[in-house]
Amino acid sequence: MTIEWKRLSGVPFGDKLMASPPLARSSSNGLLVIDLAALRRNYRLLSTAVRPAACAAVVKADAYGLGLAPIVKALMAEDCNTFFVATLAEAKQLRAIAPRATIYVLDGLFPDSAAEFAAAGVQPVLNSLEEACDWADYNDRMFKRLPAAVHIDTGMNRLGLTAEETGRLAADEALLENVPLSLAMSHLACADEPGHAKNAAQRDAFAALAAMLPAAARSLANSAGIFLGPRYHFDLARPGIALYGARFSAQGANPMEPVVGLYGRIAHVRVAEKGETVGYGAAKTLSRRTTLAIVAAGYADGYMRRLGSSDESEGFAVYLGDYRAPIIGRISMDLMAVDVTGLPESLVRRGALVELIGENIPVDVFAAAAGTIGYEILTLLGRRYERIYTGS
Ligand SMILES: *Cc1c(COP(=O)(O)O)cnc(C)c1O
Image (tube, rainbow, N blue to C red):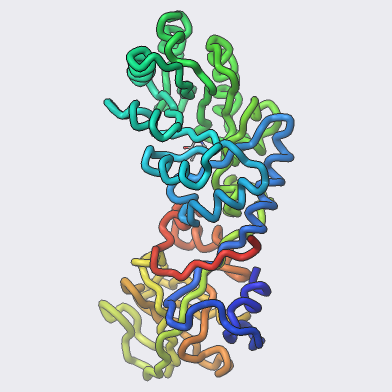
């Protein structure tokens, strides 16, 4: 990805200065590079892994922060035709991009919202008997038979019908008559821990409960669930994070290709003396004469404050070419300082780019340093970065 980026950017990056004209605006504070070819290869890997089951894509939260429209178009080019989002607003956006796709709304049906689902041609995931009754009422009143999915809770205690409620739904022919079920689904709580006993228990509970319902298809596996093996695949897999290249499992190597690169612009270079402090709170005292590059990215861009450093604690780092540059002091809203003392002048220039996430800093390493998971990093990536989609 970095090589392609070098070619695209036309700005000094690494030790090479690329000759091609910059596609990136020289005024942008930072660049988010999203590799759609890698995304498509990730989808292909997952859809092959689950065959003969089908493979949907979870594109909630603006496709995990990476941009709904370009992500969905790239996935449709791989013949992906079923998508999951969290909210009806996301579903409406998606419908405009994917006129013929099957769209499920995971957060389900809020009171009095059935008509809006119907108008958008999207299906709620019915998360309770109440929601099922609402959908049935709407179908009954409008003389329609619009399909919906049903979520069966098998141990997450978040959304979905309990075993007892699933039994009541299965026994209620009048209700089922007005709730054509296109899909029965459940969600694994511990799929990222392959050895966890809850996985098999949820799988078995789901198989038994789904068998009671006249649903057309069954779906259990998220990204991590896919790698638990074929017994978890049922008819439709629902990966999200693996498509976007971040780690889905607590253990083992990440088999997915990275999709995201993040680069910040050097706004300013300055030298500060030994004994001086840097940034808010005077949190970091310099132990030597230091060249500082001030990078135009901060916590408003999703570069979390806890990645900063102080006299008491070491912080995280960025990369200039192959050189690691530690963060000095607190992360501000829009800026951070990094130590570039002694690095080649070709790299330490106003306007040059530094790697925040990329070849040297995988998103999972970044996430671990921030004490969180790749999911949160991706969905927090701010709106201020210029976005470049490669490989489309
Ligand atoms: C978000 C979500 C997924 C996708 O999970 P990943 O771990 O990102 O693959 C699947 N199913 C449900 C119900 C979800 O909420």
